[in-house]
Length: 261
Image (tube, rainbow, N blue to C red; front, side):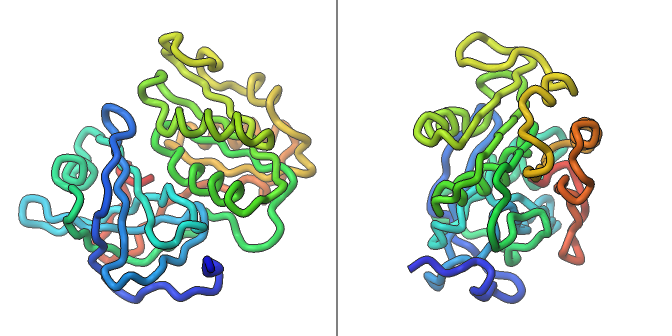
């Protein structure tokens, strides 16, 4: 029986998680499957993150990464990491972390999450780049639990090759009519159906459900989220119905950086 993520207890302090799988998602992104060494189940809310540590040039550095897997599969959790210029932890993970290695971690945390209780009738998920990772967790959780929520998944990427989870999400959208997937590709190659060019206010407004019954989650770079939040307000979304991933470090040695998601 799957434990309820709002009632099960998280671990205290640091815990070395075992990497039991690595999957290459795009040319610069990989997912890492992590398990607890004691075999215990994970407890987290869809959308939350964990902080992990890597020793780089003799220094232990902590960074936060959104969990991309569903709480309905609590025997493991997955983080998805993209290579970035100057990203010391992200790049170390991609260059070194393999199956069988351990990774120091802190328990799942964060307010950017789908809370327990009845979800809204319409949920708008807006992401860009690696900001798609918590949206995958939220989407899988809703589908895994049979929620009747209409999911409006709107993602922006450079091209098909950099659309993380593209094939999986397309398959899920074909299988679940309540999942409406919209990919905006700024430099499409013509390999998949998509909206060509960047997301803007007019194109977003054309895809939105009535604001009175909807809630929106935003994850991506700050400028992207600021633009999207303004467009949602123009469409009638109340401030409390717009939830943004505003990252804050939770470990004393952690520093906010563009590496998280």
